[in-house]
Amino acid sequence: MLRYYAWLAWRSLRRNPVLTGLMVLAIGIGIGASVTTITVLHVLSGDPLPSKSDVLFYPQLDPEDATHYQEGDRPPDQLTYVDAMNLLRDARGKRQAAMSGGGGVLVPDQPNADPYIADLRFSTPDIFALFDIPFLYGSGWSAEQEDGRARVVVLSRRLNQRLFGGENSVGQEIRLGSDRFRVIGVIDEWRPNPHFYDLTTGPYADSEEAFLPLHTSIELEMARNGDMTCFGDGRMSPEEQLISGNCMWLQYWVELESPEARGDFERYLANYSETQREAGRFERSFNGRLMSVMEWLDYKRVVPDDVQLQVWIALGFLVVCIVNTIGLMLAKFLRRAGDIGVRRALGATPGSVFTQYLLEAGMIGLAGAVVGLGLSLLGLLAVRMQPVDYAGFAQLDLPMFGLAVGLSLLASLAAGVLPAWQACRIAPALQLKSE
Image (cartoon, rainbow, N blue to C red; front, top):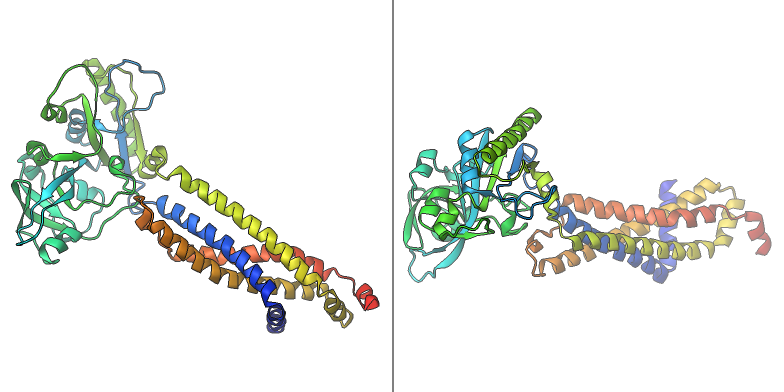
């Protein structure tokens, strides 16, 4: 029977192609706008590290002076060198790493190759195990190499392909500025989205091209990327600022495997802050926080407000499209009141009439899904052409494909319920009498 209803629905759609086209286009435009904006929101608000985001935490401390402080003020986003090194030394988590973004002039050894500025990440050794960064070749550096200011480097797959054609480059050397570094590892593709571990360089920034020991970068006075906030009246040279307790510029991440470990670390932060206050460093009472990856991203509001606004506007536009489709379907179905009356007189039940016309609405929805998918692909292409740092992430994945189809069917069925209900309630006697 469903095959017969589908055949009747197809004949009905072919009978008036202009009206059918208008309904399909209305559904398709609404779906295209909605899926485009929802896809952008989906890729921007996703979990950047699903395997570990629930056990990675970002601690904050407040070492600033008491000037202009008010109860409830947020603590600084970054740590000073002194505090980061103290936390590393105490090692209260399974793994922990202090880090900062940076840059350096990479001078290729290849003839006729031009130097260029490479994005770097300066970190303590645990960063690779902490973030589950996969290796193609070699490994990261050791604590001894960190303490010894070793001239070693780990390359990204992209940079290794550029410099060494993708071959195993462990043992080779590269030149950054006036210094040479020995390659000890090459990581595989790794680009978490958002760039959760360092939001100061941009929430959707690309991953770095090379990783170097933090203390090596300090000793060589390599350029940093990101923010540095200093407090106090003392004047310091740039070198003194980096290793002082008055300038905040380091990100710090710690791995805690259980809720109990998180509670212990929170108490440790409070005790550490009180100890520093008693020693005369901290002037404020404890003003610290400990947040997981997703809590940190939510706290920093990394998803742009305009993206969320666009989603609501697109969904509102979809509702308008559905209302218009309801009007078009209602006009189409009621124009066939005579045919419906004859069918009812010949024995068709209200349920069979309702099913037939609801199936016709579903066919319009499937056609609208095809149009909507095409429009959403064009919309995402337009997003990727925009000068925003998240443009490259605007891709239609399988869940969003399913959303487009499901949303189209839901929209068309929602639009078809009222017209189909009105059609099945047509009194056959009145229609036969009028004929």
